[in-house]
Length: 82
Image (tube, rainbow, N blue to C red; front, side, top):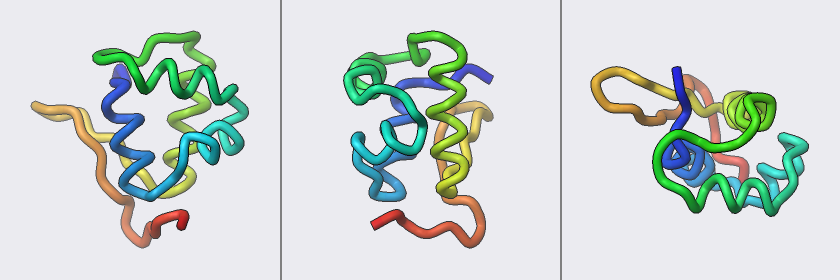
């Protein structure tokens, strides 16, 4: 399923993770995280970059949904990173 920039931003905010934290956890440069989050629609960037962001957020307890309307939710037992 394609990941939207809005889902990355919402997932990060859901668990109270900063952009700096996401950068560190994913290995993606902070400037790239900021650029991807500032756009609307499908996350633009290399597949490996978007996959790294997805993996970091999923490891922190975010589940991405993509039914009729794409979204995010906390995985069972997940807690915020703050």
